[in-house]
Length: 421
Ligand SMILES: [Zn+2]
Image 1: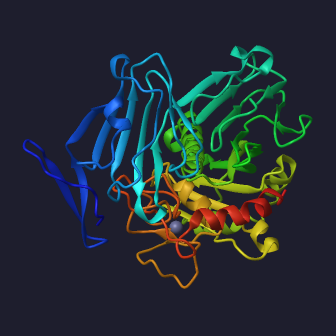
Image 2: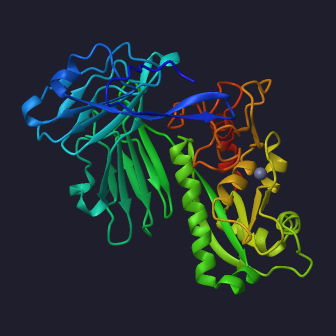
Image 3: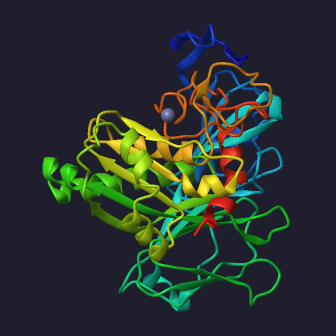
């Protein structure tokens, strides 16, 4: 599939797997070449698709640049056991400025020939509890992603993002706290702030000018389950299933770098009507059910997702062009017949997505999944929506620019959806 650097030496082992979908052999694994940081800094060419550069005290270098002309899809991992931090030059890394490598950190990069740059495929996350931050001040960021969690008893009024911070670095804030909080330090003005409410997950990212900007907006969802579903598996179990479906949906949106997240504004039981035998029935009825629509308006839910015992796996309206009909049709359904990954798929339909295709040419109808790699709308086998900016572990892009790009389609629609209620 790709012209990676591959010189097989004595004792090496390489495993290839044949992809039926692409009619090509793909590299599954091969021997990892271990080199010291000193050797790594001097690397011009690679002799294996897998190279690990180890930073330890005896072979430490303060900075390193990844090789400029590796083979396509070659991978480099960086690992540090040194207490001294090292700088990884960002000039040939896609989407990032310089990166810092600290003790215990693991980074993985893959070279994407068509981008002429290295793509960061694995990196560490720093976790903070809000109460551990003095006056809500986030220390200087040392990793590409930092997660800060808020809850009752674990809360500060203001979270201050550190300035300056490196381009591409992100902070993801999650709150279950009753009180709202403000995130400060965005853009040019220090007074600029974003307010977060209960259940919110909001990501912030440093742009190429070094300014913080809000990366995600919030779509509010009312989660409903039927009395029959609660009876069949127990109400506690049913509520857990709904929460797990929501968690998997948000995980996929984070993985895919979508510009929105979903917030649950209600988790409530509704009576299944006698004539509901297949999912088509609640899918139609919930749009006009007076009690449900009253709750939707009270809670200002942009979307509704329902789980019941009806025949079927999942079913949803595909919303796109007309905001009027889309707001009305913002309903997805699933059944106990299937698993908790159904929600992320059905919600994708609500966000305007069609099923997956097995082609690079859709004639510009890019709101589709990628069936060849099993994205969420194309088989739902991996926790990603299709996008040309994401890759499988074999290095295959999950989408094609302007042709297969579910993330773009959802990103273009999300602000409209967030304003439905
Ligand atoms: Zn579907």
